[in-house]
Length: 127
Image (cartoon, rainbow, N blue to C red; front, side, top):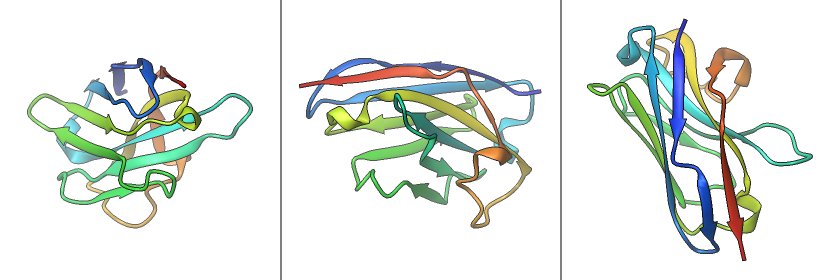
């Protein structure tokens, strides 16, 4: 099965930026969509962003409001999340996720049950 190695989490000030990265291994990375989810303390898992297998279709959660950008590099088997203008409510564990469905680019992209998730990386935003 796929293995996901996340990095880039840490501390940021309000208005600051972080870039999360995730390296996938164990399957043909270029054939599958990728995504990011997050979980804040006491909250449910929340969809952050997704990108299809080709990198041409992206989706973002409603809270993002243009602040985050998802991208992928199929030559390096890597998906990234650039986070700008961070706010305290962005504090959460962020999870890289790999879609189990080959060549999928439909509308069912925010269901956590169709993804294999990584271990997560902590993002903390302080005022």
